[in-house]
Amino acid sequence: MCGMNRVALYDQGMNPAQTFPHALYVHLPFCAALCTYCDFASEVYASARAQRYLDALEKEMSVRVKAVGHSAPDAFAPRTIFLGGGTPSALNLPELQRFFSILKQHVDVSRVEEFTIEANPGSTEPAKLEFLLAQGVNRISFGVQSFQPHLLKLLGRVHGASQGREAVRMARAAGFKNVSIDLMHGLPTQSQDDLRRDLDEALALGTDHLSAYGLIYEDGTPLTNAVERGTVVALAETEENTHYVTVMETLERGGLPQYEISNYARPGREAQHNLVYWRNEAYLGVGVSAASFVGFERTVNFIAMDSYMKAAEASGDAIDSRETLDASARARESLILELRLARGIDPNEFCARWGVNPLVGSVAFETFLREGIMERMPDGRVRISRAGMPVADGVLAEFV
Image 1 (tube, rainbow, N blue to C red):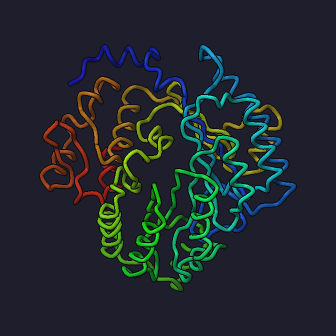
Image 2 (image 1 turned 60 degrees about the horizontal axis):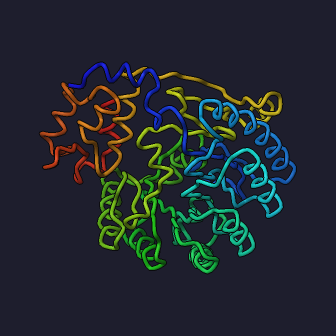
Image 3 (image 1 turned 30 degrees about the vertical axis):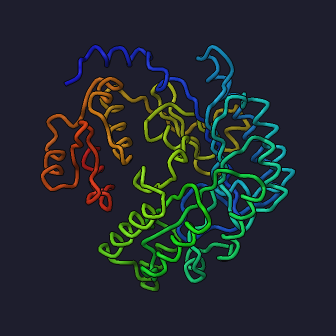
């Protein structure tokens, strides 16, 4: 058990990793086209909307960054920045130039160690890549999803297989030393051979980091609607689990060991920004639908574009919901997030951070240990086992 005095200390805000953010997320919601599986806050790019959005983002950033700065001894100087969406690379070069002008007006980027941008292969071009590098962006993540034409069509992607390959090569030629790609598995009509070819292509490109996501059928998306109508047949759960194991085994053999449920990297290339989330450390998010975790308060911005822009334009405050987590809720949430990592948790370290260990006395935990779905390591760490990884989401749900 953990000493309750630690809970009191952390409730008083004496853990800076949890109370002051060193990570910034910016949501840029525009895409060339909307994918059939996606339910993120995004919309098809239009110049007028992009200009208005950047106006709103500038207003929000000026307010939110100033508020964060009041709790710090100096200006907001994050160690990681992540530009996500949507597809940030959907903005044209003048719009990207304006965005970075806004960013650098309000944020001290001199201490950034990892600066990531998500990009679509179809909107990647040398001029943009050169500009991004000049602005300090040092990591690029391509939403490839697949190199198989029939799967790209199924997903509604607007790029072809050759563009996925060329985008990676283009980024390397421009000077990017840290390149990540996203692939998907468990797709309708996706065979084991399809998946192996995708993985082999990613490895052949010298990818530093790979996010391999199992398809989730989100309510209201075109792909989910097609499955419900019976025009598309989802893979059986056993096939989806087989896909997951294929991903693990193939990437580990290729030099990208698994470090999180859906993420694989060459040693030293793990996504430092995302590790902030999985360690449940503080971060600031700006833009439509962006979430923040600052001072133990979780906030989420308006998800609808028009609602977000109207709120940001009016006052700079576009927060739609707030929740302050007490010590018990923080510990439970942190357990679920940290167990996503292949390294699992060290019970002593966890107690030192959160003052309590939710696994103590947990019937679900003891059951998972007996079934081999979770395991204790010789050094005392606790983690989801290799056998449990394909069903990790169900395991974590038991600790909510």
